[in-house]
Image 1 (cartoon, one colour):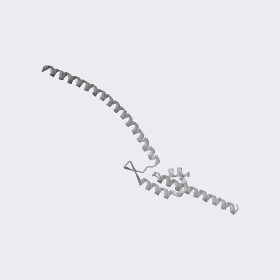
Image 2 (tube, one colour):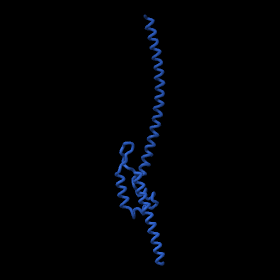
Image 3 (cartoon, one colour):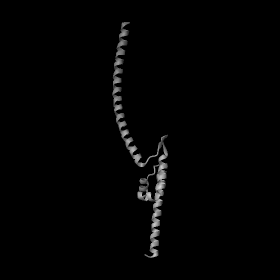
Image 4 (spheres, one colour):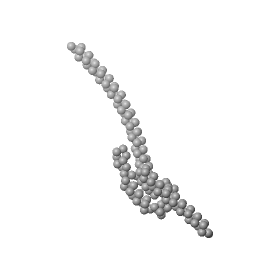
Length: 143
């Protein structure tokens, strides 16, 4: 191979390496911006590189970012909660959706029970009013 061919290959390899590095740095910045925990899996999928590439070239940097982001916390509706990975968020969301469905069912049954109790209360009020009128009528007739 001639020197010009090897120089061209070397330059192309360096450009590809630079694009990968920038993609990884952009992925880390995007995860930080969204306040997500930084993991090798998330960085690899966002940057379009393999996890092995990250382990070979960015292990220390991503490990440090991951550890610092895991110790970080967020404030949601006035409550401070620890940062989570996207997988943890999906798991938490699934658990909360199930709990929300159970609460909706419970609310529905409580509303039905409340409706029945209101009807019974109205019947008792009517009965009470009937007895009150009879008592008033009986006590005025005695006089």
